[in-house]
Image 1: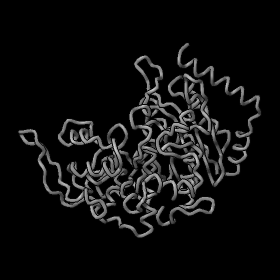
Image 2 (image 1 turned 120 degrees about the vertical axis):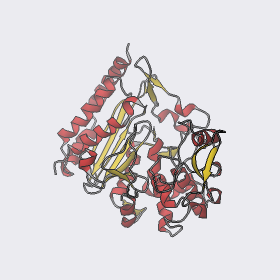
Image 3 (image 1 turned 90 degrees about the horizontal axis):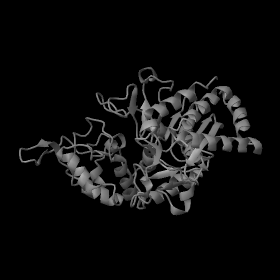
Image 4 (image 1 turned 45 degrees about the horizontal axis):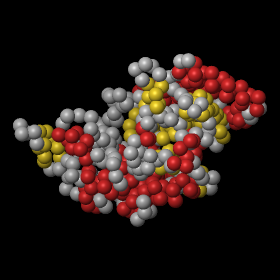
Length: 423
């Protein structure tokens, strides 16, 4: 039996089971959609579109969750979290978020900003002395050694919020600085070890002159530890997850929850989905980083997004002030600096705020979003966005490395959410 038929047959059985059980969630969501100015009929287009990806064997399953004007207007789970075990996707399924960790890290650091612990223009070395007096990489000599100079200035906290610090992720090139990142293995260890290693690597470019996706959010997480005096994961739990009632958000993949996680799949040369084993590699399931180590359910992450759409407050609990969220979702890129796009090039009509992508011109971006819409995505296909003008948040969860899990699906998701707005 082909992968496509395996998934389709199991999904059909699951759908019949829900029908016979008299599931009420779609009915409730349909009523909420009308109240919140959205068309339930048009929202069905979203289900049909992504169910087709599952039935065609491009992804194993999908979970979507949409909130407008405080009402859950749509929630859907379809397909399989684990193909071999025939375990269905559900609203309780955990997803490894990868870079959707980054906005949470930025909120954690902004909490400390509101407490007066730092200013945006402070050099990061003021709090992390291991990152003092960084040199600038300008090329390589005939002997193969890196040529280093003094930069015009050292990176600031503002720079690590907006990926303009001079750092990289590294490991994808043949330059000396790329090799330095690869050899340092920054992700293998604690946040303190990461910044100590980073302090021995030169800057890749002058701070403030380029936007380059990087380890900046891991530096943010280390700043949280130093400024708060507690481990980053403990700070996030105490100051964000517990207050917001995010009971299904964790770092890594705890053994006790392993059977609730969606398997991360990738496409093989045979055109079938194969488990990547990404979280089975040594240390991968237990690391605590600021850029990629959170796991959550769609509904739980939506609570974080709802806090942001409500200008920093949810259910009577305030995490940030309205002014701080205003600052977060503004474009912070210097004049002449553009944000890179997935797959290369630049992201037209979009800038970068404090830890989030920000739409600056919907027409130039070529989508239905509002100016100021912000959010981010994860490497395995997860995606969320917040539109404060429309009082709208939406979360999209799959676990697919590359291929069908790329930016196209997140763009399609946004279009299908916005086309359902009727009021």
